[in-house]
Length: 183
Image 1: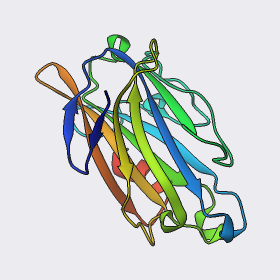
Image 2 (image 1 turned 90 degrees about the horizontal axis):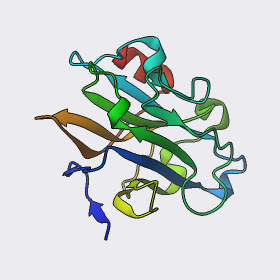
Image 3 (image 1 turned 45 degrees about the vertical axis):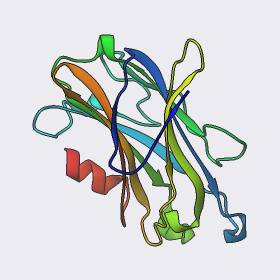
């Protein structure tokens, strides 16, 4: 049975290989589709991206070590379940990696006048990709009324083990702001 997390809660992942699913529904009343984009920042001890290639997103779908693979960009968020997924294989992760951050941003948020306050049913979950068994899930039920980018969660290494933390912290800005933070 999956563990349902609350903001700030941490749990041991317990698997070397799994998929991180991210999902959301846009508010149809806004008019335009919500194009949300999942991005992954693989960080070292200094909380910065190990190298540019360790920023995984819709234009760089795989980390050079093969440990993190984005399965592709969903332009509308239509349908049930995961809207974007990231496959993780910690057995391949670069030895310098100590943290993996999962961020979701709204593409062209300012031009479309969109923010996470208009997004519903946002979640991040981790599941066993071999059995499809859900290990944990974090529903972002907060109202991000001005935020256009949200760090959904992060994996971090402590004492040789990888743990997941439900983050749920947003900012008014975009992908560039996270690139500045982690670069």
